[in-house]
Length: 149
Length: 208
Image (cartoon, rainbow over all chains, first blue to last red; front, side, top):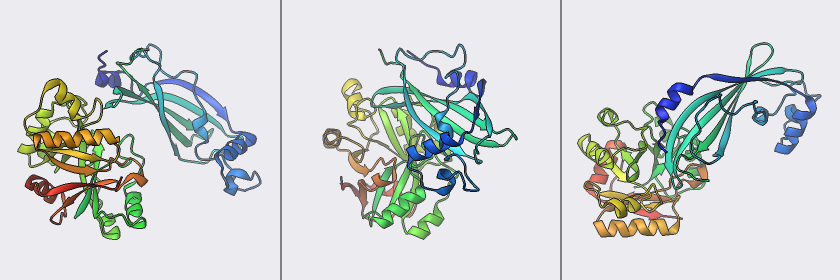
């Protein structure tokens, strides 16, 4: 299966296709901090004046859809997760309500031991109720055009 | 002088190492290398200037690229404006002949890397399509290769009388310095590196 990655990127990158809201809850922050092995007071002590979610907390959220409607299917396989990258811009505090919008940020290809791969970078941007950008999460997904199920 | 000629920083999409952290690791572990080359995937990092890090840590930091061709992945050293104009570094299907010819013409050197690796190495493609004119050097020691893959690369070099270089193919800090290339003379910049590679006076070394 031939994939025109440049055309795919031209047609789909930058289009916002999903918006959800998430609320910051103290217990969720504490659970996440414990799971990550955080020890810093600002992440594990709700009494700390600077208490906030751990920096990678927003990586736990997903939108309602992974791709825009009618986004072309690449290959026969399901693809696989190629990792997440979190850019922490501002604190996420208990009670904050973040608006998370999703878009395809980038599409690129590379070749590897397992053959050609198309990387789709799904970006979620989290903005708080005052309009401040709190976090950006890039989630890379790999699709293999030649892979058969 | 010993240089690790194949490494990726966070400028590569799959690189997880900052250049400064490579320098810190080399110093902390007292690795027996004098410097390293950054060979980012499908791009040349024209902007970064690592002279301050070079001075601070006493290591040479050179810049190259790793491009993708119809015969597998290829390291390019001595990238300049002419070479950047000669082909699109971001493509994954560059004709190897174009990369080799352009490098030669523009004062650079192209080196097929991890030749023994399935799908993205030179060996499999030579078996299928035959040898390519213009290859003079290959990467015979690669830090990320499996044992059999390096062996295949060395056999290929012997068969076609290619020179062999070594590079770690590091994507994380602790992988730098696993393989490298020993040169007879000092190399201060990319032009020196091209000259040394063209002279043939070098050998691949490994600490894997």
